[in-house]
Length: 244
Ligand SMILES: [Zn+2]
Image (cartoon, rainbow, N blue to C red; front, side, top):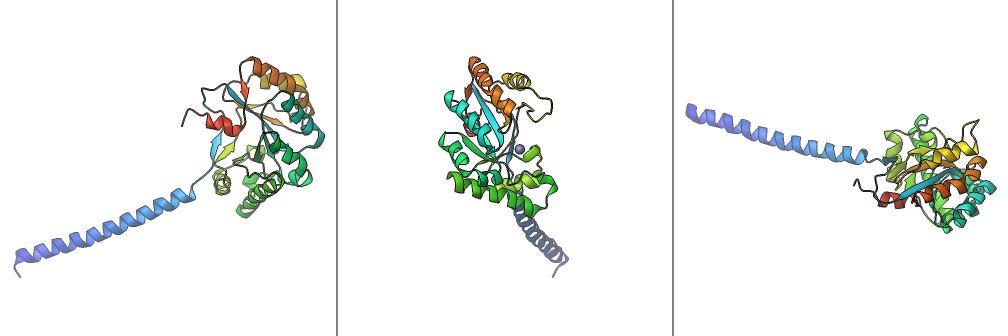
């Protein structure tokens, strides 16, 4: 073997080994990327929706809530307005008929957990249980499985949103307007004023247990409608997005 050949073997051997190493590295990188994409699939956080349609979404949390919510549903029906109700699993178990009525009247149902906990303070398996069981009890009571979720107290993080996505809900719905009907000194007038600011693409957060919100609801509908807005469910609003 000449010196030249020896050098050639050395270079070729190194290049060959390097090539294999590069290939392995690429395979490892590819697998890691695929795994991280899979692991990081999370529900998208939605607040206000960009749309060229005159759509607004009224949303009511924490139901079913007996007579107060039934009265709200009557107001919505009388005014031919569609809305979205984020139901709590344990309330659905108590009032399955009212939950079923929400769907029958053409409103959308979202998952709002079983017992309304702060999800970011729970261990992973409990987050999983909260979300999975609520999907199940809503499906049993209404025949539909939610595709939207709202975290109690809007308290969510990447881990929570990963679990939510795994149970068939690509969207975690926040809000662009909160009427803050949970405030101690809130009045019907204050709730009306806050909701009346609604514009196309807004998601308005209210609660189905609030007597003040129920009292404000006819005027909220009247005022928003007088601005040319139409009441749609959250999924209908999302279907009219222009930013995707
Ligand atoms: Zn709530």
